[in-house]
Length: 540
Image 1 (tube, rainbow, N blue to C red):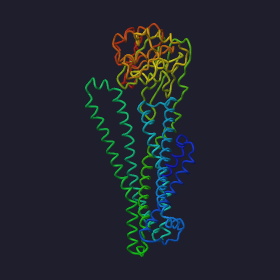
Image 2 (spheres, one colour):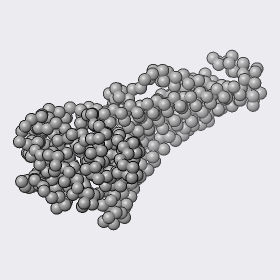
Image 3 (cartoon, one colour):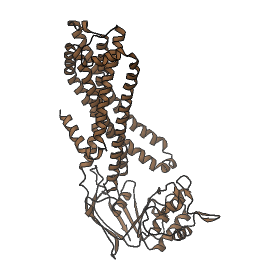
């Protein structure tokens, strides 16, 4: 009962983002089709039983309908077709509901990410992609469960009218089932928690491996990474197998318990005398749908693990104080001032920075160095307002940021469209051409073709990086954030780019693992991972 209350509570809370248009119409359609499917199943079973046994002696609510079909057997194929149409339309309607719920959740979570929620990249990917799928799966099974219950009621009603002893059998079966079902669901739910943890961890591992694929292959550590990933998947599979093992037992219990109780009643009563073909047919159908009911319960309980995580995400919205990030346009000495900032990612207890104070000089080249995981990229996010500090303040005395990462954003479109991405200012083709000439790139025999269609497969890594730099510069940024942005460039290209940047008189904050590759650096900030991520060195 406690679990049921939790599920209802989470469903109501998450309904704000999972609801879809025409929800009442969709649910009403599913309910009606479910009942039509159940009634057509009963009708088909009774009609075929009457044909085989040579007659029908029923006296129930559906007797007139049955007699119409028996008197007009040419209508029977139409009933068969109708039954399968009911099922098909019901299935497609539920699938449409699932797809809409998935869409709404993904869009909402993506908006959460863009609204400055302090997600790590791996968490953002996991929540948007996998969590949304699991939650929509929950809602599909919830509707399927309601469906199965309605069908069960229809089958039980028919059998009860046929013989009241059957009603006693099914009632006893449900009572007998209650405890073992509860026990098995508890076991399955435990392993579902493990599946959630391992799934999230495997998603993080995939992201880490893919992002560092070049380095891994260069250092010939492929087999080690593959083995580590295989071990992670093995742990995930072990939990998944245990979950399926207990879940499957729940699927078999209803038919076993009901048939067992029914066999006892048959052996000690006169129920066997009333066993007709239609009674047996509907009973078997009931066994089938009862298995669907318990499977749906298992899936609902298991998927609730993910729904509860979603509601947890929705509830923890107030942890970010946007007032901790202040952006001014001023003539202050520093481009950025960090005053006692502390930061940790959402859903983490580990602080990346704790009471960090730091100043970035205006119109100077500052490099950030530190070990992998020390927080260089995170610091760039804090300096630019992509992340918000938990306490302290970040004051930016400039107007506009530019950002260039190790893998530039390139999409299949014209060269002009790629260069103009994110630029809301008026930029002429001549301004673009001037920057292309400065960077000495993309010139063809006929000159520069801004309408040339490009994508990340048709360009070299150096060309993509140059596009990113040109894009930032034509946007008239005054602070340029670089995150391993020159890792894939040769020495001559890197020197060319920084010669151009020096002439622009802008603030450059350059996160890199190799400080020695840069000339004319004004400041060097080294982040120490050992000493609680504090600034180890700040050389001017």
